[in-house]
Image (cartoon, rainbow, N blue to C red; front, side, top):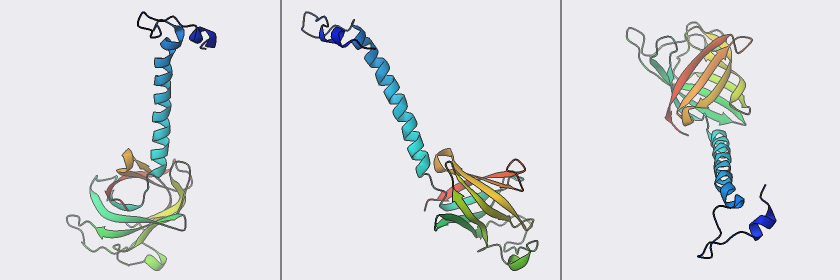
Length: 177
C-alpha cells in the first residue's frame, strides 16, 4: 500500500521534482501493467461477444478436408438458421445433388437451397440447442457452434445425445453479414 503521508512528504530532487526512489513511484509501473492487462482481457471479452456466426461460410469436410458448399447463416427472432446456397462440385459427383438419404419433406430435394441448420439459441460462448442436417447421410443431429479464430472460422459440432459423441467441422468465413 502507498502511505499517503509518505507521498505528501516525498523527497524532492534539486530540480524540485519528486524523487523516483520513493515507494509510491516504484509501484506506479506495476499498477500500470496490471491496469493494461485488465483492459486487454476486458477488450477480448467484449470483442468475443460481438463475433457473429451470421454471414456466408465455406463448409469443409472433416473427412476429406475439401470445401463442399457455401452456407448462409442468419438470425431470425433470436434463433440461428442456415441454408446451402452453393454446392461446390466434387470430382465424379453430381454437381446438383439431391438429398436421396433424407427422409420426410426433404427426401429427394436439391441440396442447394436446403435449410440444414435451425433453431440454435445463443449461450455465453456460442450457439446451441438447435439442429443440423448432414445431407450426405440424411440424418439430423443436435448442434453446437462457436465462432473462433477472430471470426474467421466457425466450429460446428453435430452430435447425438451428448456433445462428446459427435463430429466437429471448421467452416471458413466467406462473407460477413
